[in-house]
Length: 270
Image 1 (cartoon, rainbow, N blue to C red):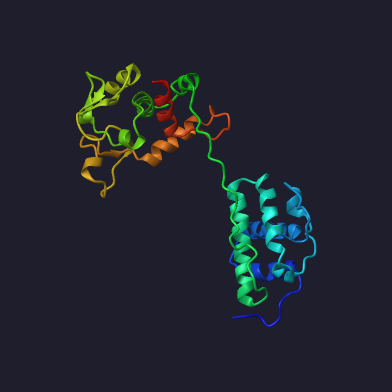
Image 2: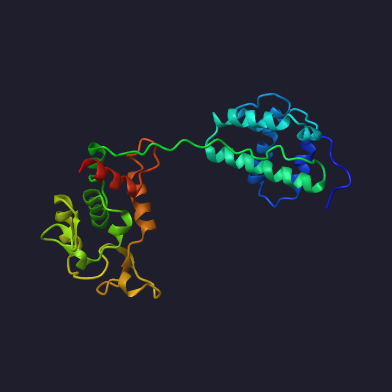
């Protein structure tokens, strides 16, 4: 299906495209800013950066310029420049928004080509893994956390075992006297975990090692339920949420660390 008359200006084409989308006001504003930003490189100009970009009036751009043979190269250069100031997710979102608009304009018959063909955002550099220092680990173990959390964190750090493996442990998997998991000699723990485990296991000889605070739901499998308390096995998501929230005050970035940081520290320090 095509429109009877194509708009002359790029800005007007944006208005038509946004009118077809079911977006909230905040999302509509994000789409408009993203699409307007591409107007500057279309006429070989540099868009404003940061907050100035939000309220800036874009240059007048003929919509037909999108079919110009040099447009693909101009957009490629703009993408490289934008990558220097925008994080990869933002850049990918802005490029995706433009792709959507271009596809709709082609369907209307307003443009013919695709200046973004084979154009991809620059690959993001691999993040450098953070290994928590012994001093940071000491601060973690001084946090006012509950017995379950302190035991979980110590166990992850001292065994350096995969998080999923630790959360899947049952009480009868543990050889407390030898400080190891039965049948897994390599999975051993130290004095910190050895001190906490007997307190955590008081009155229990079977069932999941790490339990939720609430009783298990009726759909919980028997192996993930404690027969004494009726509580369920602690989930990865809940364990991760608790650790990240607890460590947000220690993380210099304020985000909090992940359970995998504990294992990485254990591998590095032991």
